[in-house]
Image 1 (cartoon, helix red, strand yellow):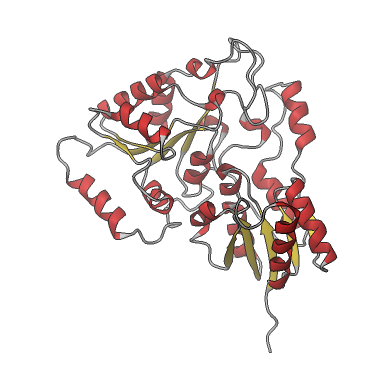
Image 2 (spheres, one colour):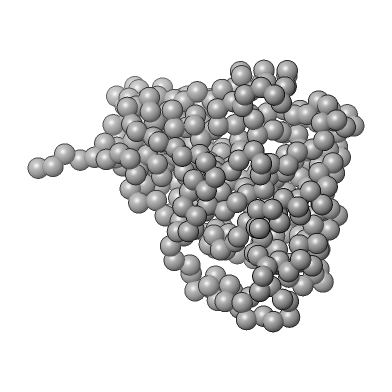
Length: 359
């Protein structure tokens, strides 16, 4: 009787961008090892990984079913029942530390990864753009698997994920009908234009592009013959994007109109993405798209650049005007007088970068 493949249980909750950065790493681990992985993550993030064979998803709703120490004990018992050979913590917070303790009590081998908290804080405190960049989050995830004796060869060059966009192998009829309808619309000449995604929002104000400049960017791109697809969260972000795109032929608001899985299908059909330091940039990179990232309060040298993208695809707020940039690791802190940092990234610079990449 053949021996079953090694089984690793992996946990990562947190924000969408942190979870999305797991995709290329899990893809590499599954491709290079005889292994099965069960990923524990929030229910809303499951569609990110739907194309990965050999990956099992256990959705964990921490607000409903696994609250507090008692809920984590229940979760630990459920993980134990999966019979994993190892448990790898790729989150490393108090909740997952408690979970690790429970699992060790139940006889499960556990390990964690090096999040690099201290060196990131030190880099922000004494920032020098000439210093070598810190390890990427992708590399830190990979090293967590390598510590378990697994092969994880990450090609982090441009277009490291397949550029044929095969991650979404089959689009749903609803999404395909929408894309086909755009091709038949003749009111806008886009024969030589591109489909460009734009996600101007982020978790914090110091990473969000001003909406008046976002509107101007859309207008310029459409005048150049491109179509712009706006991504954002349902609710207030979707409402603001609808106002931004009002009366703009060639600008399409996707926020609030599609499920997350459908948005991913639509994203896979794009030619390019413009994003902030946010989850949408990482999601687009997973499809092999070129991603232009706009950095305000944060900086990619701390390890959060989208996968497969080079430094030449990054645009920054002006450190001559704002010498204290980056202001924090995650962009949640802004000194007085720094509220307008994203305005120091001109629309013209973004358009020029778009044209360079498309050309």
